[in-house]
Every structure is written in structure tokens, then in C-alpha cells.
Amino acid sequence: MVAPIAIAVLAFGLTYGVLARAAGMGAIAPVVMSATTFAGSAQFAAASILGAAGGTVTAIVAALLLNARYVPIGISVAPGFEGGLLRRLLAAQLVVDESWAVSSRRGFDFRVLVGAGTVLYVTWNLGTAIGVLGGGALGDPNRLGLDAAFPALFLALLVSQLRSRRAWIAAFIAAAIAFVLIPFVRPGIPIVAASAACLIGWRRT
Amino acid sequence: MSPVWITVTAVGAGTIVLKAAGPVLLGGRPLPRRVADVVELLAPSLLAALVVTQTVGGDGRLVFDARLAGLAAAIVALRLRAPLLLVVVVAAVVAALIRLL
Image 1 (cartoon, rainbow over the protein chains, first blue to last red):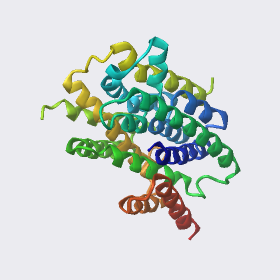
Image 2 (tube, each protein chain N blue to C red):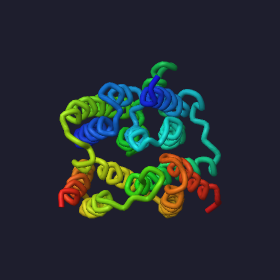
Image 3 (cartoon, rainbow over the protein chains, first blue to last red):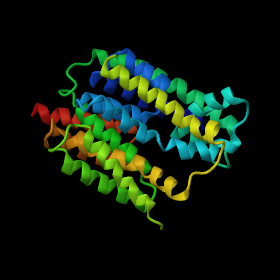
């Protein structure tokens, strides 16, 4: 059950290593980020904003807003957590979209979370390391079309998040805000400003 | 510290706290319904904005170039249910080919 996801995460980590390096993050920083952050979309967002000279604060804010979803996810799985403070703290770091999905199929299973999460953590970091090494051997990122890889990647991640009508509407509003703002503000700002589209969730359904 | 390392450190520390918030700090107490609904829409909003800025964003202006063709190819690949890596590679290859022409 975990094997196909692990292969996908390895490829995903490899992509991150290559693109983060192409975005100018160097060789060590992407590896450290995969080990400490362990959250794909936020890491890609940070890399792409830094690569587009979007500013440090913007990169940090966008990445953390993307990871804010782990608060409600963490709350939903918290009752199933076992062990003391340190064990809970470490196990919580293994929660990513994929390990959460696998461990929540028939009610939340803490052991599956720890098992699948550990496998995915190792493959994600292994993929990043291979990608960083391979990325260093590649030539000019733009000539290879690597700048077109980022939007494709974000689109693929977006599709997996479009689970409700509201999510579609929020995505359209956010896309419009970003498009309109691009000519007027520094790169990166349109992304953070567009996050305001999430406020449509405040309305009662 | 360089901007890259400041980002890596801050995002790493912040993410550890966000992930631990539920299982360690809040102990399973649910968020208010409306707050949870808003947070759930953060990821699709930001990812949609990232698609736009990474496709047509330049240095403070709109730039329409080979990245658009790459994105179009990615849409086709996604509709054909291609795996993520293939979607990304297809987009890059199409953009690179257009630049060669």
C-alpha cells in the first residue's frame, strides 16, 4: 500500500532537489529543508519565490500559510496519538498529506501513520539528495524549461486540493488577485495577497 | 545569514510548530467551524496564485512566454492522469522545445 506512494514521493523529492537547485538555493539548503520542513508544496513555494527574487519574508509567509492546513489535520488525528510528549512531537512531524491519507482510510491508525510517515520521510529526503546532485549537472535552467516545471507542479498540487465547490471558487479568486497584482508589486506579494481568497470560507454554507 | 538560510530556518521551525499544534499543544480540541473552513481554503488559494505567478510573472510585469505552452501541456498531461513527475517533465520539455524554435 505504501510502496506506490513511496515511489511517487521519491520522484517528488527528486523534482524538488532539481528545481530548488535551479532556483538558486544551492546544494545543502534544499537537503536541510527537506529534513526539517518535510512538506512538499511549502518547500516548492519557498524555492520558487526565492528563485523569482520575491523576498525572504514573502517566501516564509507563503510557505507557512500553505502549511497552516496541518493544524486542522493535526487536530483531527490527535485523539489517536499514543505515547509521551516527545513521541507525539516526533510523530506529528511525520504527518504529510500522503501519510495522513494512508493512515486515515478506516478510522485513524497511529501505527500506520508512523510506519508510512517514516518510509515517506526517508524517500523524500533521499529523493531531494539525488535531485540536488543531479540538478548540479544540468545546464541553464531556463533553456531546459525548468521555469515551466514550477507552474506545472503547482497546478498538479492544486488539482489534488480542489475537493469542493468552495475550493474551486477560492482558487479562481486567488488566481485573479495574483494576475491583477503582478504588474504593480514585488514578485511574491501577489501570492501572499491572493491567500485572502480563503476568507470566502467564513461564509456559512 | 543569507536569504536562503533564513527561509529554510524560519519555515522549518514554523512548520514543526504547525504540525505539532494539534497532537501536542491543542490535544484534539477542534477549531471553530468557520476558522477550519477558512484554513482549508488556504492551500488551494495559494497554489492557484502560484500557478499564475510562476506562469506569467516577470520582474514586476506580466510576461507571456514559453511557460504558457508548458502549462498547457501540463493540463493535457493531467487530464490524461499522468503521474506528477511526468506532468512536470512534459511541461519543461515543451517549454524548452518552444525556446529552441
